[in-house]
Image (cartoon, rainbow, N blue to C red; front, side, top):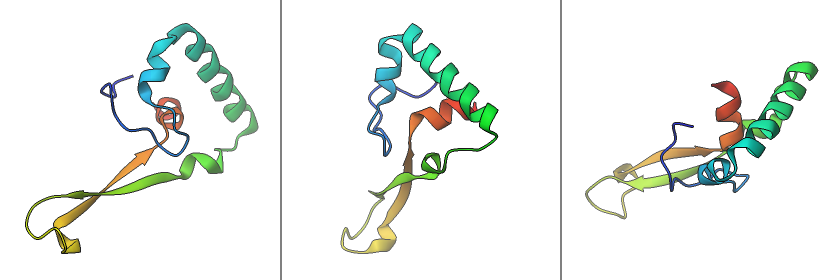
Length: 82
């Protein structure tokens, strides 16, 4: 995976570091999930979710315009789509 270590997880709570911890096991798991998704022809609805977090840019911290949103999607859909 290209994601940097220590990044925040998405809604599923599984950080990218965990996928690296036992690569052989996760490759089999991701392969099984991917095959099931492809066989069903349906993209799981739960994979469309993400946590949206406001990140402070600069200026007055009380002003909403001084924040930008970032999205924290789950890692499994990112692996599947790449």
